[in-house]
Amino acid sequence: MSAAFSKSTAEIPRGYSRIELCHNHKDSGQVNNTTVSEIARSLLSLDGFRPRWWSRGSGGGHLQTMASSMQSAKKADSQDVKTENIMVADYGNISFDLGFFERHPNTAIAVFVHGIGGEATSPYNEGLARWMAKPISEGGLGVRVVKLNLRGCRDLILTAPQIHHAGEVNDLGAAIAKIRAEFKTAPIYLVGSSLGAGIAMNYLGDMGEDSPVTAAFLQSPVHKFVESAEGFKGSAIHWIYNKLLGGFFTKMFKDNQRVFEDDYVSALSTLTSPTSTPPSSIRATCSVENLLEGLDSVSISSSDSPHRYVQYDDQAALETLERVRQAIAKGKLTLTGFSNEVVAPLAGYDTPEEFKITTSSARAIPNVRVPVLCVNACDDPLMKGKDLPRSEMYASPWVVMATTPKGGHLGFSGTGVDGQSGPDGRWSTRVGFEWFRAIQDANPSPRPAHEVVPWIAKPGWFHPRGRPEMRYMRVSKEFPHMMIPPAPYTPPTLKHSRSPFGLLRARLGL
Image 1 (cartoon, rainbow, N blue to C red):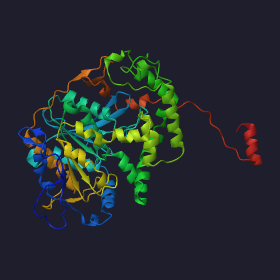
Image 2 (image 1 turned 180 degrees about the vertical axis):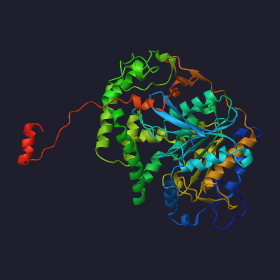
Image 3 (image 1 turned 90 degrees about the vertical axis):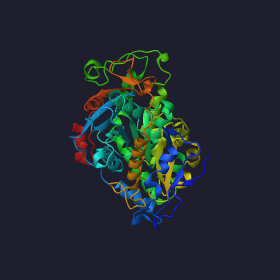
Image 4 (image 1 turned 180 degrees about the horizontal axis):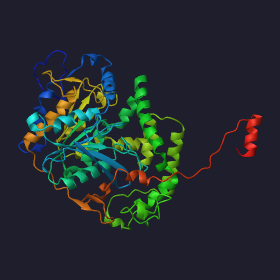
C-alpha cells in the first residue's frame, strides 16, 4: 500500500494549492513501457491549482459549485454533429451526439457521460470535448466525440419505469457497444462527470479485463453515496442542494408518469419477459406489427444468458410502482428522498442502504483494469474530502485520484502553477486534456476485441458477445414517443359550488 503523495516537492507560488495524488506507485499498472503512476506524475497541470480569488475563502466550494451550475449548456453545431437514438434491454431509450464522424475509422473516440440534470452539451464536459476534438495541428487531439444523453435528459422521454442512476451500467455498455460496432478498431476514451463519473467507474469495474475502453478521466465522482447522503444533513445550504436535485427527478417522474402506470407496465412486461408471447398491442390504437416492428418478443430459454431479465408483471413489481406513485404524490421530494423512495425500489433494491452501497463507485475501483484519473476537491459539498476512497486508490494499480483543497463540485475554476487553464477557464479541463495526450503518447496496446453480435432472441438487436444485458437496437428519434400509450379515458367532471346556481348546474348535468 502506498502512502499519500504530493506530486511536486518543489516550492509552488503563493496562493496555489499542492495536489495530493492517491495512487499505488509501487505496483502501478503498465501502459506499454511506462506506468499509470508515471503518466499521472508527468502532468504539468498537477503541479498545483490556484482557484479564482472569489472562491478561496471558507465557502469557496459552494461558490465554485454554484458558478458551475449556473453556466448554460452550449448549443451544438448541427453541421458537425449527428444524433442517434437507441433502445436498450428494458425498452428504455438513450441518445448520443456523434461529432467529427467523417474522420478516419481508426481515430480515437472520446465518450462523455454527464451528471444529474445534465445533457450532452453540459458546460463541464463541453470545454474538454471541443478541445480534444480540435485537429492536432490546432493544439487538440483530433478525436471523435460522442456525448450521451441519459434516460429522461434533454429531450428524451422515458419509455421504461427506470431512472438513470450510478449502478445502471448497461445503458453505457449498450452505447459503447453501438460505437464499437461502427468503429471496430478505434481507441475509446471515457469521460464522466459527477453521477456520470460513477456510472463510468462502475462500468469499468463491471467489465474488468474485457473493457474496450483505453483510458478514462473522471471529474468530481461521488464515490460513496452513504457518506454523501450524510453530508446533506450538515447545513441549510446542503438542504438547498438536496431540494434542487430532488426537484429535477420529481419533475422527470411527473413529466413521464404514464410509463409508471400499471396498464403500460403490464404491456411492457410482455416485451421484456424471456418466455412471454408478443402482445397484440402496447398502445390501444396500434397493433404491434405496425408500431413495434422488430420489437416483438421471442421465447428463449433461461440458459441463453446467465444475466437477470427485467420483469415488470409480477405482483411485487406492481406493488413497488404503487409505493413509488404514493411517494411522488406526497409532494416534491429531496434528492435523498427520491433516491430512497423511488430510484432504489425501481432499480430492484430492498433497502435504500443496499442501493447506496451497491451502486457506489468506490466498490468498483479494485476491479478496474485500465488507466483512470479522478479529480476531486476536498471542499466538494456532495463528496467531502474526509470521505474520499483513499485506501482503495492506494491499493489500485490502475486508478489515480488527484485531490485539491478547493474546487467545489464540477467547479475547478482557476489555473495551474503556470497560470494556464482550459479554454473554458477550468483547471480540470486542462488536467483531462493532458491526461489523454499523455495516454496517446504512451501508445497503449489495443484493448481486447469487443465483438458485437446479433442477439439470437430478436432481429434488429445487438450486444457485446456474452453480455446480452447490454443489448441495443437503433431507433428513430420519434419512436419513443410512439411507444407511449394514451392515458385511459376519464370523463371530465365539473366542480360545482354550493350556491343555488351551482346546484342547479349540477342537477342539469352542466
